[in-house]
Length: 307
Image (cartoon, rainbow, N blue to C red; front, side, top):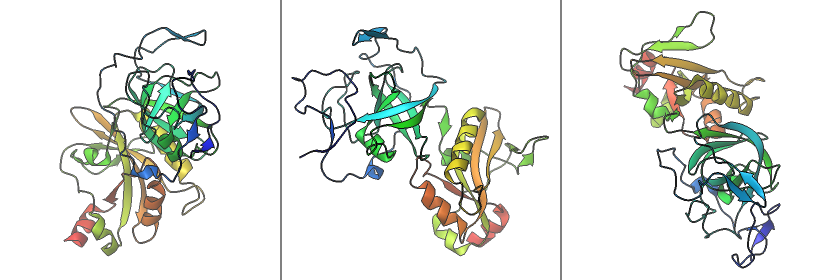
């Protein structure tokens, strides 16, 4: 038995192709936190699904040459059991339990971060299908993606869709491989800039946190563009508002200059490790920003504590 009807079908379908007449949510519980995260990688355009222009229901659509710089807001819907196991537009098999999506114009495949503008939840999906072919909708999410963003119950939700390229975003650990000196304030700026010259103090092992009373930073990520870092900073400020103090914790950007490139680290803090830190880690664990690193605010003191 299948439960919970989807708001409406997002793509034109043939009744003979699908065993289920109207799309539905699968029976039984499903925990999207067990779904492997999508990591943007360099992939060639798929042979299927990229014909441009193409026509659906008498309307012509154009496929973008590149996803670079794509950042739009609109309405998201989702599709589930009716389409599960059937071919997507690029020839892959649709898996409603994976983080994927359908889009009318982005090249296939495209990696994109989708953020629910109502609750701040955000995940990365791989776009491998076409749709939704309704004028008021921007993206069709897989069941797992919609469940993760809390879109299943409402059927639709306002979202931001931002295309990601492999070089656009680094994990927190990647950025720690850079060598840095202490941060210095930029004239007329509230952000910090660091020059790369010597090894950094590594992130504190999680097992040492309970033995340290030193203030800590949470590093959320490091980005090659300042625009992306500013966007993440804004999302975090909105998401964490009301925790600890009315306006939320301090969220800031550190710019790390090296001979090869500039990185923009997004950090939260300083936080008291004994009280504030676990609360923020717990809150972020429910979002796509779960992979944080704990960074000592005072590297020398923290090193002595660990030793």
